[in-house]
Image 1: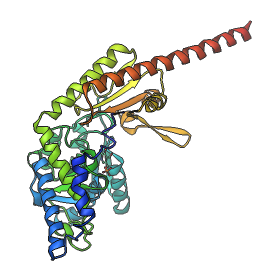
Image 2 (image 1 turned 135 degrees about the horizontal axis):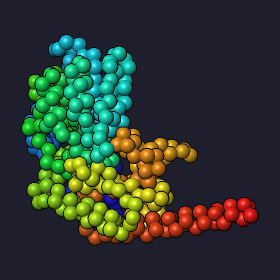
Image 3 (image 1 turned 30 degrees about the vertical axis):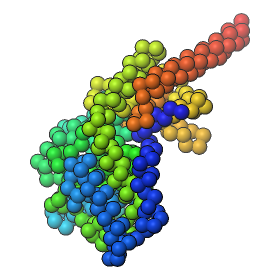
Image 4 (image 1 turned 180 degrees about the vertical axis):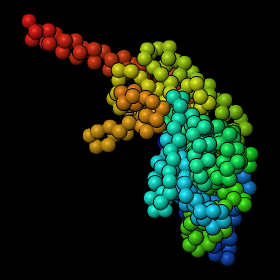
Length: 400
Ligand SMILES: Cc1ncc(COP(=O)(O)O)c(C=O)c1O
């Protein structure tokens, strides 16, 4: 099997799985309980918090465990809205980009709808990079909360986050960045970034599904939204998912070790060899976002004359897994909002494949995958040529 869909999710390593098992069994205590079992569980939660903080260069006290990236994004934005309205002048406008993940799009839509907020979606250029002058216009017009992803899940294109943070600081806007895809694929330092809040997810870095973290800068105007029983220092109520948190902590430690051992350069080599090979062996291939700064593991490639879903179905038969730039919804296709925002036509969106490499991949995988894609594309194009030729013949016959 070649799994090259790491932006969708990743497998837990044996080490991560083993780290969770005690907390599903004999160490089942509630971290809020004051007896030995509770303290044991609580100590594991704090160890994981330190590991996640270390990976992100944040303070442990800035890490709030959540149920994943989607919840982190929502908590970041709802909490920013509450915080802005308690400390500053009321927030009346919010600004995101056209390429955000639905976790942000939908949270903002709800927030804007029920609070009558104005919502600006910043355009991106043809490489998928957010337009900074449009951001400045939105800030000048009063956007009090800004949410811009660190790196895009489909194209891997990285946002100019330091410039974005400087602009938001200049206009005293709260800045959240969805860093779910950036973690582990680019050096990330929360302390140096100048953002107020950052969202990350466990299952994108070799941790289990259903766990993530929201990192909130100390002193930033953010108020808790889910208060419940006061867990997570009163910032996210609900009994903590100890086993998942333990797995997330172990995944963070494993990833830190990999990063120290050159994982980013290793992934870049694999991605570059895949793209170079594909461009050499097939005509009509475009790498989306090629001229922008991109995540080292992600290739979004548009291939003319084929449907990505047909190619992926054949690859899946060979136990090779990647994903498409369009989503199947019952019998119709919905093109990616990210690729559409970059100006790709419907036909280009339908012919787009996303390959995302990760810790389980090697250079050999890249070679095998590109050869399988080449074979399938050649076969599909031939089939199409044949049916077109047959149609031409029939049409000519009818004309005589
Ligand atoms: C950029 C981005 N943000 C948020 C999410 C949501 O994360 P989760 O699956 O942990 O809810 C994803 C997941 O694909 C993502 O790619």
